[in-house]
Length: 338
Image (cartoon, rainbow, N blue to C red):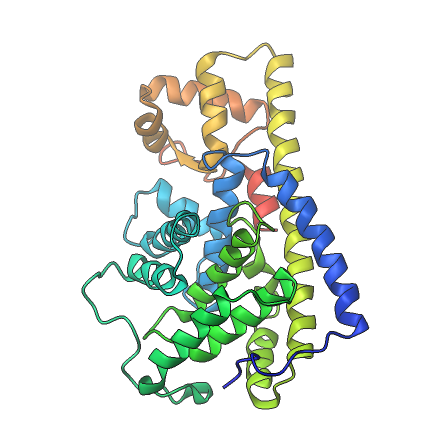
C-alpha cells in the first residue's frame, strides 16, 4: 500500500517552485470566487462544467453543450448522472463545515450518487484491474485513510491534497464511481484547508486534456512509490486548472456586463428582456417552450424578446427553422466548450 505515513517525503526544489506557483494561482482564484454566491450563474456553470468533465474522464461522457440541450428538452433521465454528481459535491461542501469524520462525508457523497441509503457501502467484489486491494482489506485501509486525513500532517495543503487523492484512488473502496468521488475530494480538501471557497476549480478539465497521463501516473505511483513525481504532476494540474478557472470567470463576467451595456445603449432595457437575458446565462440553451415555462411568459412575448436578443447579437438561433427553434448564448458556450 501507498500510505506515506511512516517515511517523510522530501520535497525537492522543483516541487517548492511548483508549490509557490500553485499557491499563487489558487489564492487569486479563491479571491475571485468570493465575489459570487452559490446562486450566481458563474458558480453554477463552473460546478456543472466540472461535473461533466469529471464524468468524461471515466467515459460517462457527453459535452456541456449536450447537457444544456438535454435540460432544455427536459430529458431529465439523460442529465440525471451529472445532476447527481453536482448534488453529491454540494452535499460534501456542506458536510465539511459541521461533520468531523471524513469517512461519513465520503460515504454520504457515495450514497447521494447512487441514491441508495440501504446498500452495503464498501466494495465486496475483487477487481483485477490495477491490482486493487482485496475487499477484506478495504475497511482497515479506509480507517487508516481517515486517520491520515484528520491528522495534523506537516505537508502544505496543496501537497496533502495530492497525497489524499492518490490514496483514495488506490484504495478504490466502492463498487463504482471511485474516480468521481476522488476528484470531489480534491475540491473538499482544499475547502477544508481554507484554500478554496467552493467546488468550482476546473481540475477535471485539466486532467481530461491528457487523461491517459493521469491514469499512467497513478499506476506508476503504485508501482514505483515515486511520490515526488506524482506531487509534481498534481501541482501542475492545480496550476493549469486554477488558471483556466480564473480565465473563464473573467470572460463570463465581462461577457455579461458587455451585454447589459449593449441592452442599455439600445434602449431595449425592459424588465422582461433583462429577465430573459439573465436566464440565458444560467441556462445557455433554450427553446420557446422552455423559456415560456421557466419565466412564465406567453409564447408571443417569448418570441418577441428572443428576436430582440438575436438582433442585439446576445443569443443566436441555431436551427434556421420557423418551428422548434433553439437559441444559444453562443459566446458563453464558446468560453466553456472551445
